[in-house]
Image 1 (cartoon, rainbow, N blue to C red):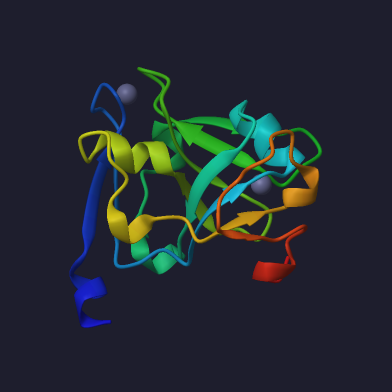
Image 2: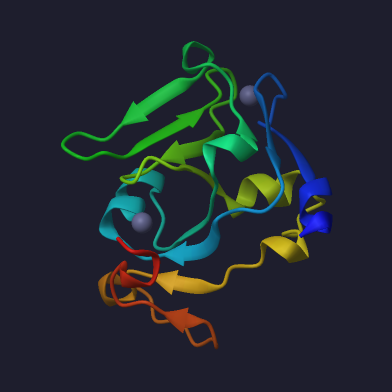
Length: 144
Ligand SMILES: [Zn+2]
Ligand SMILES: [Zn+2]
């Protein structure tokens, strides 16, 4: 535990105008297969980390572009200058940062300690995944 508190991630968008930091360990690192993530991020599978609000320092909403999905409690935030998406807020309200944002800050590699531990909403998938991670068919593995 003491080591995890020393971890700090300085993250930024492609142009560098928007910065955020994450500290310590995420609550979860996962692959989400839910239809809402597919719509929100325009991907087949969403590789995400979910954080406690206490562990992230996020830019003020006024400095970001905000895409709030119609009829869903799903929002993504990005840089208004370069357009890169930096984080989202999903139904339980937790800030969610895509793996790619950490990869970008780490020479293309996902930091080892952020490796995903499960697939969420696997029953809603559009791609089958052949790996050894837990496949949560819905959100039951994380109490959703
Ligand atoms: Zn930017
Ligand atoms: Zn999802």
